[in-house]
Image (cartoon, rainbow, N blue to C red):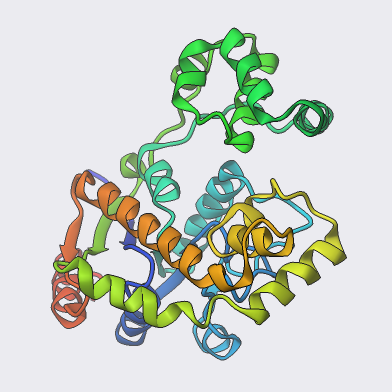
Length: 317
């Protein structure tokens, strides 16, 4: 007899689409759901303002795994997320519950669905040396080094993307192989082979409505509170500007204000434009997503009814 795969629910969408509201609504309807956040910034305990993190009151009533998971004094990599998510999925199933994975980090969702390569872990000594080279010679110099080692990989990475350049050089130095060869030889099984994926997306029919939501929310994400948060993080942990959290939208622009690269009066518009561009990229990911059931921003009830039918079909409710 064929074994029935246990379900995992995805709920993805662009920033400001209302994913948290949908997740809470679904958890209220289906008490067996456990929410796992799929967000590369909310994972950090200290990143509250610029990440649009749910309030403490919301999180207390509706716990989200992988929000406030780790301090910014550490870097929570894609591989760290993947391992933590797989462990949570397994633990939640052992409790006879269903994981509801919610967020807008499309690359994380993609890796969960299609698998991640078991590449070598970070080499702190090598990373420190590479970061020092960036300080003295600039990130473009390191990109040229990567081009000499692996031209194909260098062409796929922007010349100022220090995080990806460092990781690429690290993999090549450790394995002695090109990135493509390493990736092809080290892929782990995707979630779709082990679990029954139920994939939902919040996709705006009218882009203008999403832009309006983004703009209405923006005041709460930037300003003095954000700048104070960045200053506190920088002072307390002395983290690099290259830390993933500091390169995230709102934090990156806030840091530019603090360094005098842009005026404080420019912060709102700079962050707003960057957020709109992020939303556009997220929607592009979703357009190409095979098997994604997409619903408009205000179609939560319709999507909920469809989810109920799917769960009934699987004899879960």
